[in-house]
Length: 317
Image (cartoon, rainbow, N blue to C red):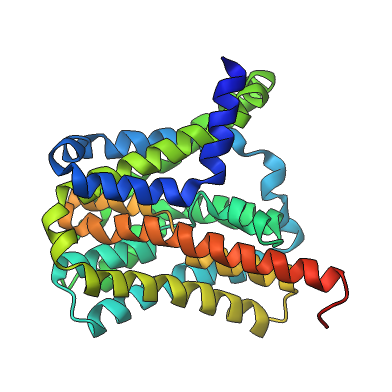
């Protein structure tokens, strides 16, 4: 039984992007059934964050002390590029207030939980990626509400204190709990770590299906403009994150890590906050972003990996 679960978990991690896309398709095909899962989104995200906490060790934060400037650059890029890009693209394309707020929520979220795997596959700086994901997530209770209030407060009423409490409950508390469990029961946690991709992927797939199911009519009707906004938002993060590392004089592996960290957001958190504090429609950009950033991130990682292989063989200067 354990070997079967391990094979399923490996499959889920390897085919993450298509499975998330499948979740979106199920939301469109079975909207009523998928919509019933929407109230479970915060709980599902809390489980995913707990799993993230299980993977963390004190050493994952040592990079903050060894390379503080690089980590600070990544965090500034994370919390500056994506929120401003979300507001600019959403405003330029004339998205409605709820969809614009949903874009801003995605842009103001911390780095995505799948980014570390994508950086690894793309031959990037994995240690930097893990550090940036962890630190940006820990900063989210403070920075995400402030950014949403700043950029979206004139569009719709925003209660930053309520957002702060939700992020504490959904993100920070489960992560800290996971870290403590690993410290107290490290041997047991090491045995279950290989199975965690199954939990994370399943949770994200259900979140996407639920959000798309609630907004099936809108997703089918206004898809082109919103998809364009989401694709442009993700592309801006990947490109500007890479350029920020290049301008700062960082090496190629660090540039790749910052690019992925900036371009891949914790869209599950954005969807949860939108559903709880605003309206299901505001969660639709997060659901589409969750599908697209895994596809684009996987494609970019494949491109980088192949280029790195050619470089090592001496075929490319």
